[in-house]
Image 1 (cartoon, rainbow, N blue to C red):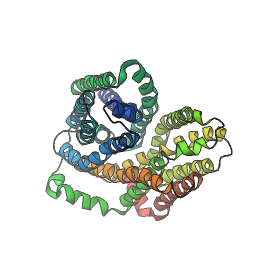
Image 2 (cartoon, rainbow, N blue to C red; image 1 turned 90 degrees about the horizontal axis):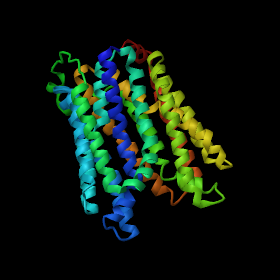
Image 3 (cartoon, helix red, strand yellow; image 1 turned 180 degrees about the vertical axis):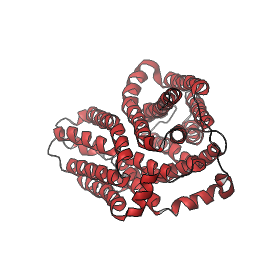
Image 4 (cartoon, rainbow, N blue to C red; image 1 turned 30 degrees about the vertical axis):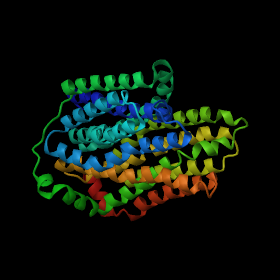
Length: 403
């Protein structure tokens, strides 16, 4: 990397980190904020919390390819600035709402106007050499893990100091300042982009993407991974509670186990990225899915709470390789003028697992035990790994290496 690009990458890493941090600060506190906004019974609080948590993912899934296409046609730097500005605007407005309905609408806008993670990933992928793509993607995955780890920890502390309104205004101001830094400091080396994106259109590019068998296999595996990892979130507190002598300590243990998981992912993400630069990605994905499956299934039958600590470390270590590998395969299969659109479609596709996982766990949790849910999720995780390992051909491996 050149000096200019190192400076730009630090800004991109910070953008990625701040975007995830702000989301993770807010998410655990939404029920408390909704209660302050006038929801006067538990049913209303749960309903508006569920809607507000799901809203950004749904709207982002619909708009991500559109923003990607616009970046392909214009400037990817400006897509980063636009996404940061949209995030800052919505965070600030969220601190001024007076009803749960207004909050829900702004959460929809947060997903539709944001998209910092994809904008950052596309710009980074377009600027680095092919042999560094894995490392860069791994470092960005580390930013996601860092934000996911620190967000809830900072959120709980800052909520006590500032209250929700001031906390949101503070986050909005911080992201706005970072937007200005990116506007001034980000550099983009523009290449001569051909008109493929324009001539094929949005759905034409989607058709091209799903006709590439290796990409489709990784997308399916990524859906499985997101389904499993996000699907375990609503089940984990119930499962952990069964291993505690004092159930009132459940929230503390969930915080500890989540922090351990994300800290491990933060440390490991760059290592997996380097491995992807040196080794076939499908083998990396299978290894990570196997380790993740092992950690999840042993958690299903762990005899005591102490077992969860090393198992969550292993799960975080392994899971940090999964989504970054999917995006790396999509990047390597794309022409420069298609990167944004294809990354957008990839994000939209992976949202299927992110949304369906918790819904399925919530539904089946009423019929089967938590240990069985953990076991099913672990098996599905491994099935995604087998999908990319067994069906990847030697020709696809050679093409992957040449890219």
